[in-house]
Length: 308
Image (cartoon, rainbow, N blue to C red; front, side, top):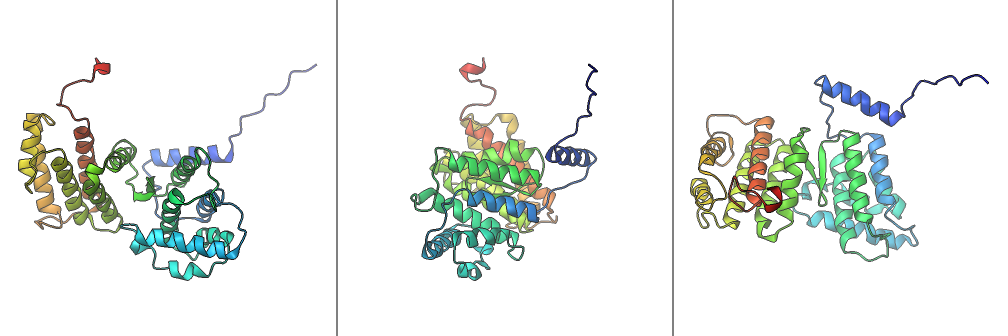
């Protein structure tokens, strides 16, 4: 009996694609885009379809689309995405609604808005349409995240919102944890909405507005933590956070940098500079890192018991 001939390893197409993307990115090529190609649209549509029962009645589908559209229209910061939505009211079935996500004539902004609306609607509706399982929403979230990453679509999906991403490691290490932290505590509701507005301002080509909103979000967090409450001066709030032990004395230069950044590049205090997208991402990430540090709620340089 002869020994079997060893066959060369052949990667699966998806593995080969990922390897090719990794090589291109290692060479400095940015693959991130806000476009949705046909494959990405089909995958997103399949995610939504898997959550729905088969349509039993065309009237059900009309109510489904109407409800989801209302959720989109009511969502803060999403209204600008739904200009095309009224044209979709003619859809007559659940599959027609899902097809609107695949439709190449529907803009990416509207597709993302519809999925956001579906997520919100799914959270509060009964089992009339939704296949509810113990982890149905988590699985939907994870699948959407996988699609965004695989196709290098320039958004992260956090708590039902598609938020723009820079494409750097700071997105997963800072941006996503910051949004999750702010969303998880009602005390930071103002900061949460303002930080999201900063991210959307980057998406809409308004880096100066993003810088101003990011700094305002930090001030809201400091106020919620009792640092300089009642004051609209960042310098006083930073000083109070140092007095409270949330920041260290050597952190004081942060106040000077943030104030100068907002004063020179922000929209509320126009200065000599002209902000660009990279300036805004720097400020958003720095502010996010500070917020995460403040979230620990104890003095700098101290450890939790389990960290000793």
